[in-house]
Image: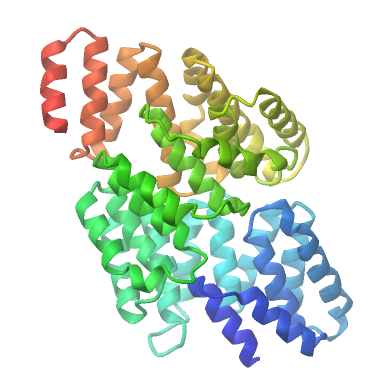
Length: 437
């Protein structure tokens, strides 16, 4: 139990190697049911097909121990089995039921929270944690982690002031909580508080960066702040040294790499050989169609490197998935597949097709998971397609939407200057460019 709690603690902070810890427990205690449940949970939140065999082994061994498991353990086993069977929604629901019945089970809380994130259950990112919090107080170990999750849920639902307050409170309780630090960074990203965001992350880098499996994502957030300022050299430096210092094949890391390079692609920046190396890592996964959020980001790398055969393979795999059952099939049909086709069209210079595909999808994109900040890449792609396709009125309307959220964004001012140019209003374009500067 002591080593199990150590592994769960590492998972909450994304530090070290919780899998190695739980493997050592199972080597010594091969009938420790919760060890298999924890190992299965780690595979669930990885969101990639490469984890399926370890997930299968964990579930099948745990099921053999069903006779000695208690109710909570059996619910963990059932949740992991549902995910293994492709019933992502059922898994999320079952982990959520564990939280409702056993609100001090921090493993279930975290996995349910991540499932809500991956499946686009935006209100439950907030409300599930709020329900659990009624059973917690500051004297309980792990309370700060629960607050950090709640802060993120509040941010994703637009409650920025409360999110920042609770996130800062979580960090004050536990400075080494990368999720809470990240929740506050999200608030600053959404409000366009660029300089504050850079300071918030850099001042705490010693708390979240070293030996941390989530560090790549906080580095990604830092890169977004620098990109907002047009500091492309700094963005590429962060990509090379922190976001993708090694050519990892971990899907979660590759998603952020694709998302950052695609943002640079939309701005017309030359990223050199980085796209090729990233596409090399994505290409072996094109047949997986395991989680459509990943597929959409794989398409960015394939499209940027014009790998037509791999793009066809990926689209075909997504089409097969969309024709099936399960939550990933729904997400693929409604969002993932049109997004992948739009990215391919954009890369081929068919901006009208990209606009036509993306316009109905952007308003419902929450359905395929990710955060508001991550899904913004779809809005940015739609805007750039409208600008390059010389659809000035649409481009102006899209930028106006962004102004309501970030009126101080240099990018937004530069984009609306381009829209004014398309509409023939050179004076307004000149004023907007000056404002961007």
